[in-house]
Length: 376
Image (tube, rainbow, N blue to C red):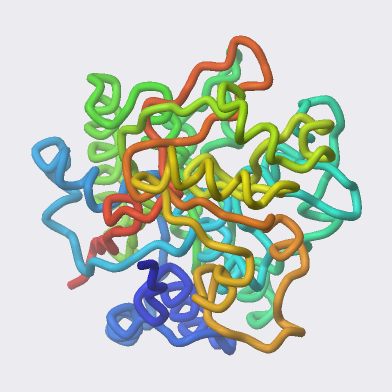
């Protein structure tokens, strides 16, 4: 059974941040954060988000997190689905996916009649560039709301993805350096780091490369905190991570036959995420029979209506506050992983399956930590 954790999740933290800077929040705040901000009302705040570094990654690499681990402040939760597109935008908009329309990596946009990778602005075939974020989703981010309230640029968004070496790999030293410079200039800094998520997808959570990344992040965190003792640093993740096993949907003849023809024509059997998988179905009887035979033990099945009535993508709200893009991308049935498996839609040749992933309903994917530094 899926339960959202309103008042103790990423949206609640976002609400607390807005409240701290005088902006009216959309949802109940996180009381632990409220108390922290009240105690440090004059300090600049840096919110680091290390993608994928959930509670289970902390526990797996407790020895490597020599500086970070002792500063754990409060265990709390991601949102559903616990995946980067949905969860980072929950913290950045103070809204649940049902409100802001950010549901998962790949979404169906009815106006374009295409399945689009949201962060890449590419359709499923990787051919057409369509800026769905600016055109349809049109988010209002918390750093913009803070700046509007203050009447000046007191807040900034810094992402590791914006700092590259000549080979296009991310330059994390420069990323941390930019955050360090901003500490003295800005009152609120959101600092997004794509690791360890970026490395755990191809390698899983226990590869030697992950240990190396974790040790590096711990070192850089210690360095920047020690250099800015008058700044309040918060560290969170957007979600946790687990090792997964691949299920290639293209090899399931019965499932392919049950999918709507327009989905197959556009090379998309499934949308949203491999572990939060939305299907547009023609033959519902065949789809359900196939699910009961093959997938029932590994995935919970919901109809679109059940996703809404069970408040999985956010608490019940007035229909005028529901984002139509969230509704459009939900098909007839949604399968949410309760085990280690992930659906892979291998219509393209040469794609490597993930060894690690998220977006399912396990506690390892949902549980995260709020970690705090310079709380004195």
